[in-house]
Length: 70
Image (cartoon, rainbow, N blue to C red; front, side, top):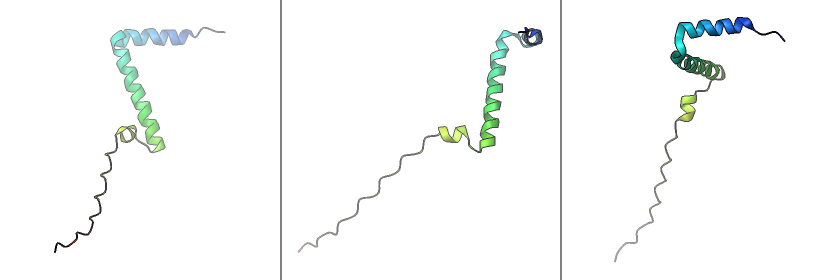
């Protein structure tokens, strides 16, 4: 099994360029981009699915015919 030295070099360069604090933000942005791409390919939207539907209004009770007062 070979040790992937090129991945270690890439990791060091990324750490030097962006620093340790920026990397989580970059990964979060990358994840959101991938998620958006997948949603676009499937034709669905996570934001649409996450919005709760308003509750259905109950139907108005049927009015009973009023008896005429004598």
